Amino acid sequence: MIVLLAKSKLLEGKQQDFIAVAEKLVKATREEPGCIYYDLVQAEERVFYFVEKYLDEDAVEAHKASEHFQTYVPMMNAFREGPSEVTKCVTVDF
Figure 1: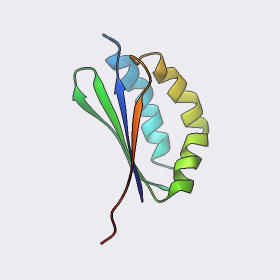
Figure 2: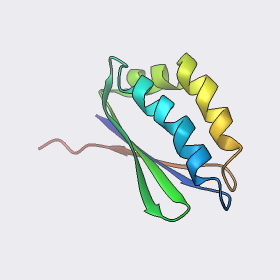
Figure 3: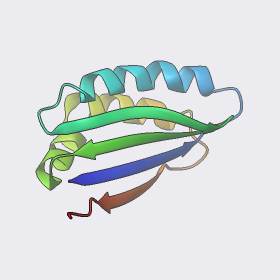
Figure 4: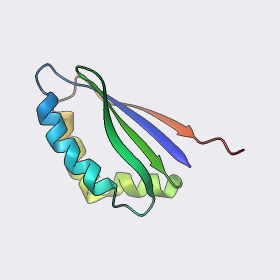
C-alpha cells in the first residue's frame, strides 16, 4: 500500500478558505475505489497535512487524474505559501 503525506503551509488568514475547499476534496476522494484512508489534519496554526493511504500506485494515479483533484488542488494552491510538499511511503509487510 502507498501512503502519502502532503504538507501545506498556508498564507496568513487563509486557513478557513483552505479548509472549505479541502473538505470537498476529502469527501470526494474517500469515494475512490482504491482509497483506503484520506483525511486532513492540522499540525500548526498554518500547517496542514493530507494523510492518504491507497491500495496501490494505480489508485494514486487515478486520484491525481480525478476531476475533483484537478478542480480543487489548483483552488487550494491560492491559499498556500509555496507548493505543497509530498512524502511518499510504502507500507512495510510483515
